[in-house]
Length: 109
Image (tube, rainbow, N blue to C red; front, side, top):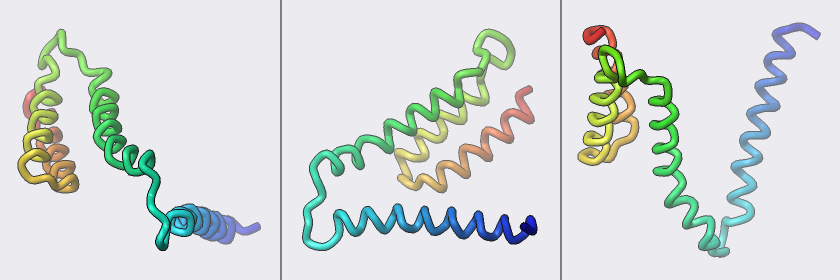
């Protein structure tokens, strides 16, 4: 099979499976049926929990014992936390904190 045809078919299958998984949630919980309390609870607590895990995962290999002592990472995480708290816009926070981190690692080191 041609590589281009295989690639296009693979993308089509992946897109269809993704679409069907999302459609299944609406078919199960759609209409007049009430969303279970467990699903509502998980929808409320999992996003912040996952963000905390991602922060720790990103900081796992930072060396705080030698120069520059993780200064770029600490400043960027603090900036992201304050910006998210003040603005509440995850996309703005992600872009701004990433830009600050990139600027800091090029100037502090």
